[in-house]
Length: 139
Image (cartoon, rainbow, N blue to C red):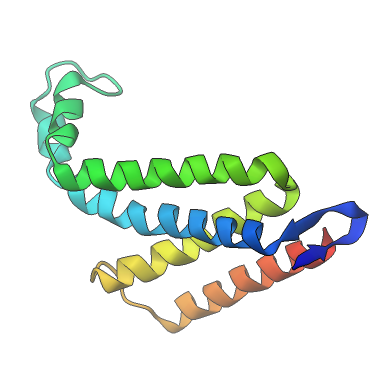
């Protein structure tokens, strides 16, 4: 199945699945990275030099298997994103992937108990989906 859109841009079913998989990898790994980095502020407070990133902070994050696993998952999403971009129009792939990643982040955060889903959250989700739909239709 191949969907041809205006201007000669096209995406097939495999590419569409790759976009969704990328968004899933990015969106689901972000809340886990946040959760796994708890305690990093304490490490930053004990660091003498106030630089952008210290060796102590890096060792702290690398010592947490859950953070490393979430980071590797996120990087796999980045590799998949670049593979998708190699054969598909960036004007479709980039906004759709980033929008869907935001939705997956929202739902994963909810499942982890970090935030609750309110009416305004669902309205925002509706607008994101509408924007993705318009983006795909107009490209």
